[in-house]
Picture 1 (tube, rainbow, N blue to C red):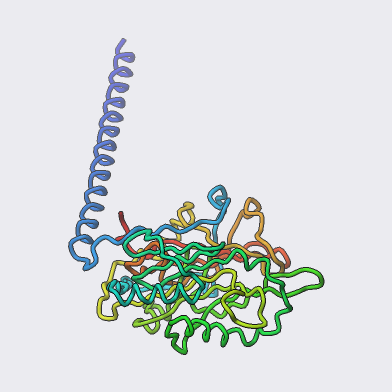
Picture 2 (cartoon, helix red, strand yellow):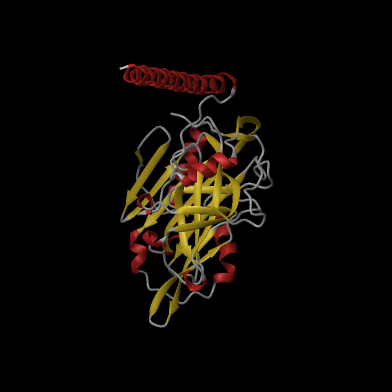
Length: 362
């Protein structure tokens, strides 16, 4: 009986110790969760109170179709075998907002006339006008002078072999100046030509842009140096995209599609925001929080089957400034992860984006 009593007593003591241990564990976990939440709130409150621009607009990157379903593994394969070093803060620039007055309205109407529009525009908003006539459309932003022009009839123009590829940079500069744009000598752009290959017409893309267009909504300026400074921050035209269906001359009738975007930043209006550590951004990438915006084969044309991508080797990371048509307020820094998948003819290059600063909130 004494032995049974001792066993029961020992068992009770063990259960009591385990219960106390479990209770202590739960209390510690609860305190940790509360502390973590309070810390995050304090960081957010601090950022809201101390940053000159306050909370910035959220960045929405347009992901490649089908990219959301893949969850590849990542490994670092840079020249040093490590992630690059970046500063603890990055600059954020405010974009200039021009006043809309009679002169800006007259300029918009003058550009529309040179594109062949004679009627009155639809006023889509206080800043955006739209002309639509004879299968042609022109959308014009009075505040920024951004415009998008499309001529669906241009697709039926008789095509002639493109013999002006080397001269089109001059033709485009001259064309923009003719419709009223003062283009500086540093103008760079991407042009898509039509060139005959046997009986077929194929697009020939000549990319000389310092502003790189990844897709229809993203314009990205590559920063110079670790500090991520914008080069020539007072004024920088971004990109011109033109399809020249008949390059025997540079008349407007022969342009099927054209977009022009430019941004100017307020040189003296710069604020610094705390940088997301690069290792944290890499962890976000590993967790599937990075956005795949571009993937292409290096030895052949076409986009790879994304479902085949099991592991991505990160070869480089840079800081760039993200600008889009929808965000005309700030130039915000992001991390650009350059990755590689496969080898030889199946070697594929990929580009991922993640945020680079704390403070992008709705």
